[in-house]
Each structure stands twice: as C-alpha cells, then as structure tokens.
Length: 497
Image 1: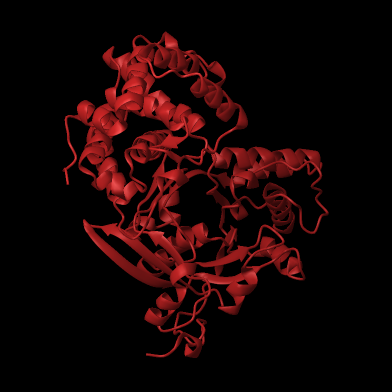
Image 2: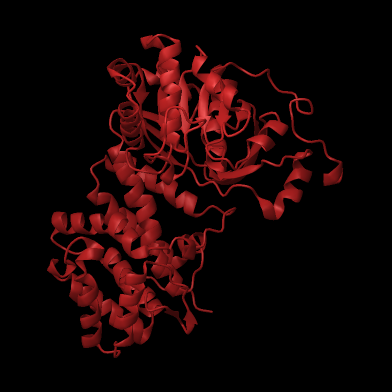
C-alpha cells in the first residue's frame, strides 16, 4: 500500500469521471453540509436519473474553500456512516456534479455576474448559516458584490431580468437550506425589499413574484464534516489524496414546500432519494422538532445526570433506552396530527440514528441553552398532552425536573459545564444556593422556576399538578439520586455488577 504522501491528488485527471454537465444549479455556500447533502443528492440524480446537471458553487463570504475545490476540479469524497436497513454500514462516493467554484470577492466577479446570462440556469440553492438570510441596509445594487446573500441574489436576478428582457421562462427555482423557519419566504421578502430600496421598478418586482419560485425547505442529515482525526487512515483506504473529504450519516430527508411540477424538474424519486415535494411542510417541521430535537433535549439532563455521556450510550442503556422509547411513543407521538404509522416510522429512524456506532454524539453538546430549547421543543408536547389526556406526561415531567437538577451544576461531585444566558445561570445559581434539601425547599425552588414567564412564555404553575410532581422528582433526585428515582418511575432496573 502506498504511503499517503505518495498518493495522487483527487482531480479529473487522476480519477475517471464524466464530462461536466451544463451549469443548471447556482449554489451559494461551499461548506460541508451542502456538499454532503444537496450536492450528494444532485450527483445521485445525475448518475441514476440522467438529470445531467452541473453545479457552480459561489463562495458567500471572502474567506472560504472554493480555491481548494477548484484545485480538485470540483471533485470530493462523501463518506456515509451509520445504520442502513438495520445494519451498521460505511460507504463512500466521489461526487462529480460540481463543475467549478467562484469567489465573487476576487477577479472571479465577472464570471459570477455572467451566471445571470446562462439560459440553462434553473435552480438556486443555499446554506449561508442561519444568519445568512438577513437584510443589510448598506447593500447597494452597484456593489461588487453585495455583503449579504439576499443582496447578491437580488442583484443577480435583476441582471437576469434585464438580459432576458423580462422573459417569464427565465425565472429560477430558489431552494434555501438555512435552518430557519420558512426560509424561502424570509429570503423572498428580503429580495423584494432590495428591489424596492434600489428602485428597480414594478416590472422587475412582478417578474420576481411571477417567474421565480421561492420554496421553503427542511433539511435533515447529521454531517460531522472533515474527519481531521483520521484523514490519513481514510486517504490510505481510498487510495488517493482528498483534502475535501466530508463525513455524514446515512439518513437524509429533504422536504421542499413547492408546486408539484417540481417533481418533474427535480427527479429525486427516480434516484431513490428521500426528497418530498409537499404543499405544506409544517407537519414535517413539527415532527422533526418534537420527535428528533425534542427527544435530544429531553434525554440530555436525564442521561448526563445518570452518568451517560453520549446519545448512543443512552439509547442502548436498559433504563434510559426504555425511558426514551416511552417518551417518544407514549407522550410525544400522541400529541401530533400526522398519521400514527408515519410518525412511528419516523421515530424508528430517529432511534436508529441515535444508535449510530460511528458517531459519538455527546449529550453535553446538546445542552447549550437547554431552557429555551425545552420551551421550543418539549413544552408544546407537554401542553398538548395535558390538553388531550387531562393528565401529565410522566416522562416529560421527569425530564423537566431533571433539567432543574442539571442546572444545579453538579453530577455526583463533578461540576457541570453549564452554558446558557447569564440571566438563566444567575437565577438558578441563586435558587440552588438557598435549597435546604427538603421537599418544601424543592417545592419553593420549582415554583419559582416554573413561574418565570420570560423563560416559558407563561406561568407553568397554572398547569394542575405540574409543580407538585416536578418538585417531588427534584426532591427525590437530590436526596436519593437520579438512578433510583428513574428506575422507580420506569419500572426498569439497570443490571447490577
């Protein structure tokens, strides 16, 4: 086997690939997620559905990786690791759909601007971070380029409108992947704002609205990124050098809220991809937030206080695993409107992803801002459960109590590295400093936490029995420990050594 320094660099000369296809996709963003999620899917559509589409990637910030991407002539390796069809599986593919990368902050600007004149251009995709879809009032039409992504897009669309004389057939399908709610609507609103601010005229505004399709989208795949700690081993296995290797999990889901004719232009179904073109993505977003994100947030304080450090350890543990399964199946799923069978299939996939043997997903990495996360991800399930069943969801309440104990900042004598807003940390610090270890003290602490309307959006003490049940768990966890308390709740016991 060759040494790594003897291996050839991955490019179109060292690796036999197809000729580049026409550049029909303009992509803002060259980061790990887009390359391992969107471009990986476009590549599969080319190879399995004869989509014959090339991607030109635009670097949205002055600093980026398009220079390295161009050195490898658009090629890079995606390694997928995780559970597939019930089995742990690792596989890799060389993505070939990227034709080139452009940095509009350099001499590439002319080439970037010329993209507006390509008659074959049809799609725009983006992932410029959550902060990327933002209005920057200083952006001007004549900037080379504009600072913001929406500013760049507005200027490029105006150039296209001018070049093609307002031809309705030259509008684009725009699918942002930034992790904000209704990302397509937000992007369209800012682009229209620039059109007005720059005085681009009613005809252009009408063309923006009528000829272009802004889609909301939901993306779902865990992408750890560049495997820095094992890159030499990976390159030796691959047999070539690749400085842009990106690692992701097997699971993927892309929900696009848009017109049904998109299925013909974006033939993901012909490539066996988990891409859904839907009229309303709200149910899919809700199930992801409540089941995937909600389970993560609910298990974090319980698992960590129990002595488990990773999500994988938690789901494989006899007691914690049963707790998580019951939380999802018995308390979250019944509160959602989608068909139960569909929700259970999604939950199966979530648990499978939690078990991924290739990824150490540390629960402390989920613990950042846990109070606000619980409000967004878990409180809606709790409230809906109470509304439907006139009773409290036992596992969710236990998770809430564990959250309070977690913010005590102590795990069996070991300090917990709490990370939250200063107001939250300060309030918990003061409350726990006054706790006397009695049930009455637990009730006082719990009532003060649940009464913080700025945290929860309401006074949770108004929910019948919640303060009492939460306080009882807090008292038991602090007096006899979380293990015995949780085992009593679930009826499961961990194997004894």
